[in-house]
Image (cartoon, rainbow, N blue to C red; front, side, top):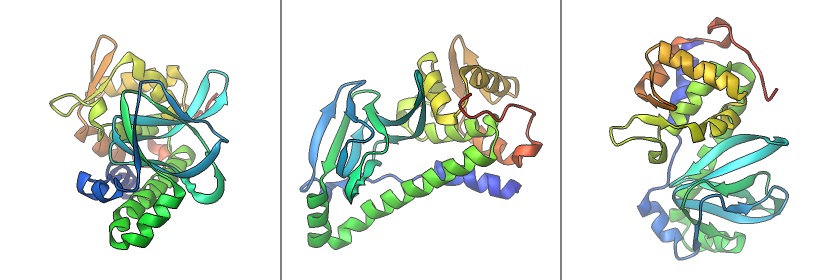
Length: 244
């Protein structure tokens, strides 16, 4: 079980990204746009057509659970896609999508996607592989919610965030500020109090350093700790809450 947990953490950390070389041939078919912080690109239930690629910044996908509460299954960062449900006929978006900072995207409509596949089949492989890797990531998230406790889900989420330069310092450490706490709650599926306690345990274990309301974490310590925790039953006794 310990090896399985380690593989899970590493699989999420290795979530694929399209390179600039792989995005370049798509540019002839897509439409680029820039979005200000907080701008909502689409709402859950709206008609969906095509797929977005993040060129810079990041987009938060969120499902509303109750007033003031939500669940964030994923943050799409540079080189990743979102809204791929729009590649299915007569589909609707299944989340809200908002830019968390100044963000640039490329939108490939359904008709343009089909044209890209038809005219440049070999160059569609990276895009299709990217979409499939993101589907695998979501399946891992479902496993986490069912099998891992709050501490373990938090460490897995932190490992994921550490791969995005928007959340890291110049020396590669993950930097979590007070404004990130709500996002952590929605990604982990836990209350703010539980996240605060879990972060305090990381500080006590020497995995995180606290400076005021900011936490600094060495990413390499997260995957090893996730593996050492073993299964959920052998981890420290904490709540297994899901959006209480």
